[in-house]
Image (cartoon, rainbow, N blue to C red; front, side):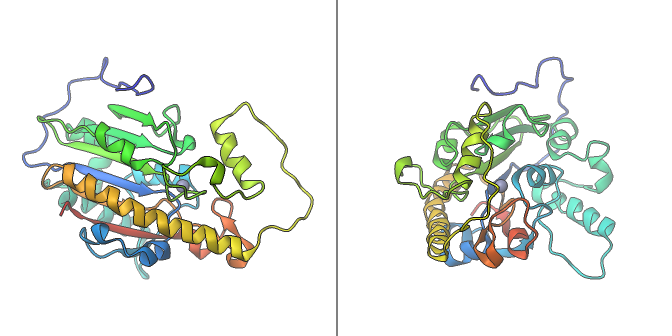
Length: 299
Ligand SMILES: [Zn+2]
């Protein structure tokens, strides 16, 4: 693939023969998407996968949340009176159904406890990632045991990922897609960046992820943080992004091989002014952990 892809084939031992009937797995992470933004958008194509659940992320921002997802631990249901170890075991066991394989249990994930490692070296999958957020770029620690791993040129263009999706005839494939239209500034790919909404300070943080050489101090004096009308506008933009992405999912589902298992979720939620918070990250709030979750065989 592209020059920034990470080729892991060289020098690695021969991949095992995949189990008979093992399914492709596609995990799509709609970055920063709130559960209630999904509900408000009423995405019809996504609804065809199954009923959307309200779940909880293990982390409030992109990097730890994606590491958690790649451990195979999906957003949780927060069940009372259940030991954590039992919940984890059950979540891992569910990969038997997702992948269409026999004998799935937690100890098969050991010692790495890393989904791409397990899929590639134990089950013989091809493993690929396309990410939109610079904090997940190919030089980070989560790029491990992927056949290809690419930071997309634009942070907000899921449609640009579709022609790059590869499925091997001989082996099942795993794809991680980190999608950025739902991330601040909730911009659709055809939207002129000069018209994006600007929030003082926040945009600067986002830009700095793209340009590590820029290092300006943040203002420390108290100021007007935001106005609620602006927050409502931003929330509407995230809902609109889901509506747009639903059309991209229709195209994605058309090109996925039959029987592919699809998971669509978010890495964390987003605050639009609740309790004077905006965004996600260093925020302890229910709405930044609440995420949408749906999975099923491609319709
Ligand atoms: Zn994120």
